[in-house]
Length: 65
Image (cartoon, rainbow, N blue to C red):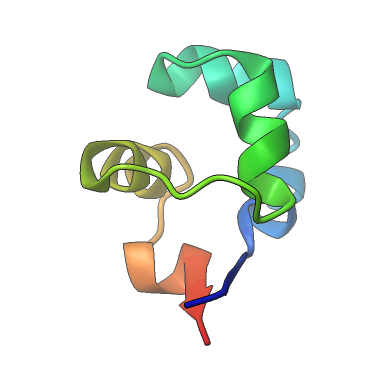
């Protein structure tokens, strides 16, 4: 199952860099890069942490096809 993310869109909305978002959720910047490109499936915990940091719901960040 393929998925797309809207992390970059939400990150831009809050004027956050990849490094800042990574720091907020406790991962490396490279993880955010891979997530934004759809090359990494996050754990449920990481998806939750990203949604909280970006003030949205998990279903708004990840679109499964």
